[in-house]
Length: 217
Image 1 (cartoon, rainbow, N blue to C red):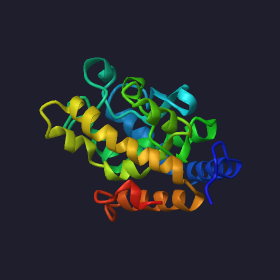
Image 2: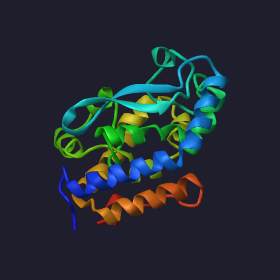
Image 3: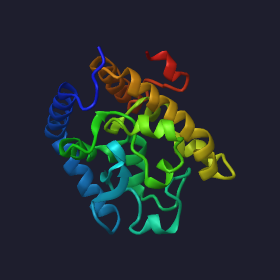
């Protein structure tokens, strides 16, 4: 059965999962934080404004993977071997470990474990009106089907002569279809499946390249 948002059962699951994840991953978090700090000058964490449920802005947490001030000298998407990315950042992005601090966003209530990935205001402004209302009706998540399908998004964009245009015109509409499908079909069972697929994808054992949002009713 599907649960409407906000749902007490989904929120309790998110809090329990995020709390347990932070507890179990504490040694990893400390090791990554130390590595980021020693690898390049700047703070351990990076905070960026994203658009959350109901269109409310919030600060998303990540381990810093770029040199300090990088956002001011380039686009809000990263493309291929982006020179702004640090040595530690390259590996953290590939392994998705840079996303782990978002469990703090889950505990704060900004996000869920699973849900449409939150975008920056610039790209949310590109959403078609009907999709915008639907996608922003739920809490955004750390992972979703689009995250798995576009796990190598940076490499895909590197092949484009105009990466930002490719993102807005080709990748973003597909992500929105995944997100809209999730809004209409989300359940605890689907969330557990997406979490499992995400872990397998990070380990290189699963790909969602050929999945269609409609395949997950």
